[in-house]
Image 1 (cartoon, rainbow, N blue to C red):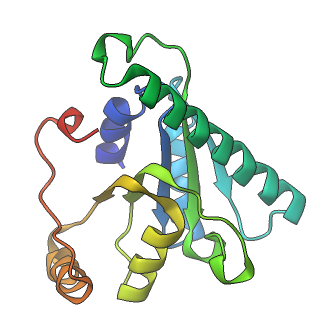
Image 2 (cartoon, rainbow, N blue to C red):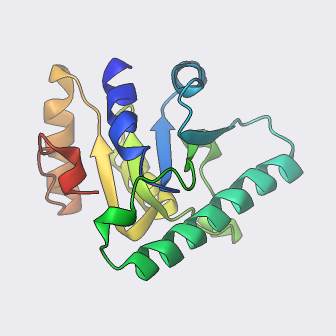
Length: 176
């Protein structure tokens, strides 16, 4: 959890950056929400399985609007790093479990976040692929948080999906 908070201390300070944190269980979702609730530079919303449909739709729509705003501001800045970090807008984050991911098969739109953080590596490769398909923008970044015993699982996902999963650089700002 401390590593996640540290990571969000860097990524979350980018004005309006849309991020999704995926958890495997509701307990982990609650723990993540509790840990980030005091971060003043991040606006977040949890997606619980028992949310009313209207409330779920509202959370997703607000996030999609934040994503559009991010894309517009990123295009307008066209790499002008001097403008980034002047506290114009909080980063936007959804914390979600696999059970609450958008359902593309039913016509629900993907979330298209700039950053997808897998707080817990899913046990199944299909779930990993679904997280990427429903949460990540085409030019987005996936950050996998793993513990020592999960390295083999991550390598398995890499091999089966033909992805190249690089180690995160020391300075995370290099990839954001």
